[in-house]
Image (cartoon, rainbow, N blue to C red; front, side, top):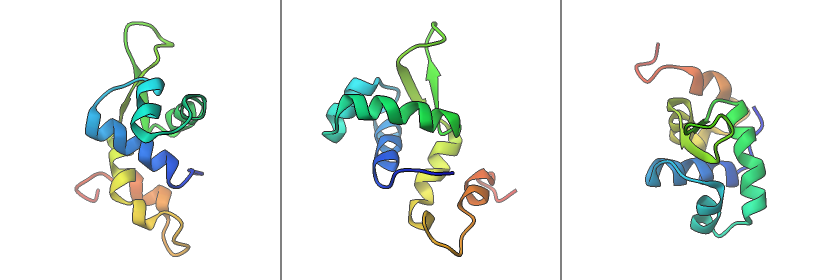
Length: 96
């Protein structure tokens, strides 16, 4: 799993704190370029950290997943060579 630190984590936090949202709104919240945020969201989608919601399959509305929430919880562990980050966030909250 290759994430951009801190941008990808900030996107996840924005979705966790503010609920489902669009790339444009997320970019405004983070003071980031909307095009850049729009390119990061499909990347996060591919890791099942966010999901698209809405009646249309290609809706521009995103929300964070449980796996995305676990990613935020373990942000400090990302980049630690002694931690298997992917395995860490795949664990269920009760450690299963």
